[in-house]
Amino acid sequence: MPIATINPATGETLRTFDALTPEQLEHKLQRASDAFSRHRRTSIAQRAEKMRRAGELLDAEKEKWARLMTMEMGKTLAAARAEAEKCAWVCRHYADHAERMLAARPVDVGGTARGEVHFLPIGAVLAVMPWNFPFWQVFRFAAPGLMAGNVGLLKHASNVPQCALAIEEIFLRAGFEEGVFQALLIGSDAVAGILDDPRVAAATLTGSTPAGQSVAERAGRNLKKTVLELGGSDPFIVMPSADLDAAARTAARARCINNGQSCIAAKRFIVHAEVADAFAERFVAEMRRLRVGDPMADGTDVGPLATAAIRDEVAEQVRASVKAGARVLTGGEPMEGPGFFYPPTVLSEVPEDAPAYHEEVFGPVATIFRAAGIDEAIALANDSVFGLGSSVWTRDEDERRRFVDEIEAGMTYVNAMVASDPRLPFGGVKQSGYGRELGEFGIHEFVNIKSVWIEDGAPETLPDAE
Ligand code: NAP
Image 1 (cartoon, rainbow, N blue to C red):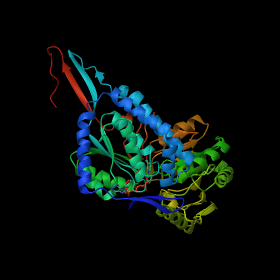
Image 2: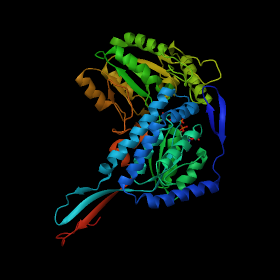
Image 3: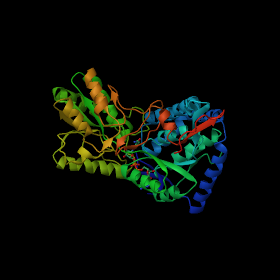
Image 4: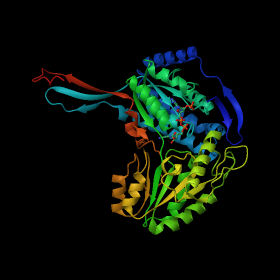
């Protein structure tokens, strides 16, 4: 894939970049290693001051960052502004809480000894990131990582190089030393060599399942830890006790957020038979109401898909599903024009052998399923290789408990759409990946959890050797 900015609203190539040469890459890896030896010795309070400053820059220059995101990957300007604000929030969150999250914890080991658990930095962490939330995906890794004393190496998606460089600039202007956070303009073919390099301690990848498999395999060979945030095909379950109007409104938003390109977008709508027709009617009306168009314009709800290849893949998944027997309730064909637009689409009666049944559709395409009761709803929800988020709509306490306990997903939101939040862990099960970002669990993924035993007096008994 060329490293280039191609405006998805017009198809125009605005800027291309050369990939780093092997010598330039070597220089950056060494710089990361040198920076780590100093960054790890800074206090958490010093790091927090810089992280807060990064948050201030995100807020103060929100409009500039938002326009950059919209230009490179087509999200609406309103969504891009909200993304910049959320990045500022995650910077503030870890600046405020890292001290507590990383504080050594005493453990009662009896006798005259003191037990402690310490959380220490591990080194340079490689982050392989996707284009869909080009700032947020990076900040949600970098804010806890840098606060923990690690340094970051970013291999961003090839279609958002200017976002990658902008984030490096933000951390530098915030006061972090050169080398603490670096964007590497490289193709995915250079990732394996970086994972082999002893100066790189671990890797985190957000992206597709095949990319996750490839990175996990190489990192595993090197015995390096990985966190993987991969694809999803989230269920959105509606039961008879739900507020149908609120559910339908949220359903359209949850499916079309970020132009339909979110890992945690609701993708499969599983509705109890008693309310299936009433929900479908409201949902289709909400999907038709969304305005598709120029992502820079006020009032646009859905912009273009990020690349021509993604638009073509979505169109093919829908075409093949219709051929297999799915019914189109709205949308269903790519839109005319130079940009990569695809309309909000709803499919029903999707057979099991249709691509839209099992595959992740990364565009504004919803599938509706009818369930006879809660057992069938849960079975349908779990009939997926993915297990990222899930949204359930019910006012019944027993149903809530069953959904929370039995849906195979990293997240279950009740009467709300799934959304990431710096305070809560984020991640999936099954082929949606492993490990967690955000919350306290997120900052603990890439630290050395060190046990410390301090003997202050004469030990009466020695601990067992192991
Ligand atoms: P992608 O093709 O997997 O790309 C993601 C990143 O991985 C890019 O930087 C890409 O580089 C790199 N990459 C691709 N193949 C690689 C390989 N074999 N080895 C090393 N790096 C590789 O994914 P995408 O199409 O951009 O993003 C959409 C996918 O991401 C969807 O499946 C979505 O659900 C998932 N996603 C998951 C989360 C989550 O938190 N769980 C969040 C957002 C998106 P190039 O650009 O150079 O190819």
